[in-house]
Image (cartoon, rainbow, N blue to C red; front, side):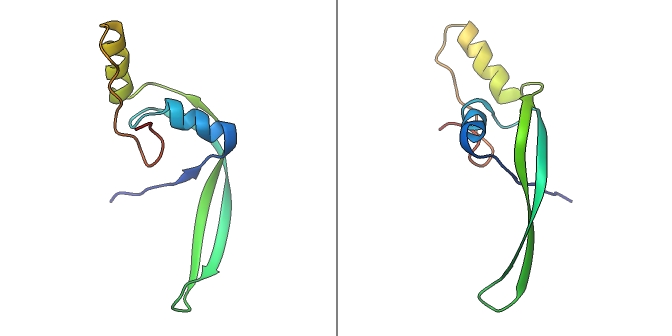
Length: 90
């Protein structure tokens, strides 16, 4: 079974993640949980939780970032990896 957790980062922290994080990178996240309730168009009550990032630090680089660094050392133009939902530059 696959489970996804969505983390939300705003402002300068979100921008730093968008510029520097790549799919597969290890991140150590400090976050708080925010509960949301709403009623959808069909009148059903919906419940959701968001994880709001309060801080982070980078851990081990993933495959995409290792390839970028290797290309830079070899004098090639860097190849950007495919990012995780809005985390990577195009």
